[in-house]
Image (cartoon, rainbow, N blue to C red; front, side, top):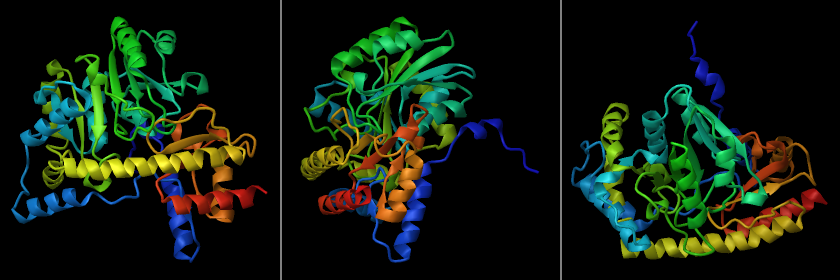
Length: 385
């Protein structure tokens, strides 16, 4: 028999993928399903990006790039921070990765020794804890709630920090809650983690999808922290598998060496396509889409509250609503199954996002058109009658 590594017992699947497969199966049988389960923008990749990818393919841009990415793309990413956030960033600190997952793997592998712990919010994105497990570290999920906007605070970090802790990972905007950390909150977190002898890692992969204010970047605060980002969400390039990491200068070399050994480089075609992602033409397209996501949020949030779901905090970004369902059911997984089978509405149960009362929450993704969301709310209303 094949011996499976012990760590695999601690790495769970995405439950939403099983639910999505069942939803697709029902659709194959002729059922109409409203999809609010998957965290993928429904908009296609902007046409100028696609055209740039096609042009790169036609001109033979199919060879390896440097492990840290195309120099021109790293320059463009640095320019993005300069033009949008007023942050001067050395392109040498930018590492282009195969999705933000590649960035997470690099960061955890370089920073975390076996047995060391990484603090993170619970609920949170499941891969965060799994990448810690992959390097034999210990993910410390800290329960958070509406009182802190479902985010870690400097006080919570101070309270839960252990002798074996080495880093804190936060996300702004966050999955599944859509909430933000203000610059003052990030500054307090950074100051506390630095004093405790750790490193702050900030997931900004939903940066750009912010609806109340401009948002910002942790890079404006200091140069000794790590920032993850992605071309998947705001830029609509999920299948192109492209992200980036901004790291302290002293850590770039080990990250580069590890990238060479793990995946050599991010997809060449995707990198050439992304060279136009920051152009005014594409940014104009993305702004229209951001406003459409905001329209969807502003419809779905009060609609779910009116149906009895508990949403005490208005999410300021991403495209998720993390809704308490205790008034309806004490088993969110069973409720999600019933909503799919009986109402034709696919949503994600809290099981995917940690151990902090997952049975009491559902995640609704507004990654489908407003008309379909309206139909989904009507189906939920009939189901709950």
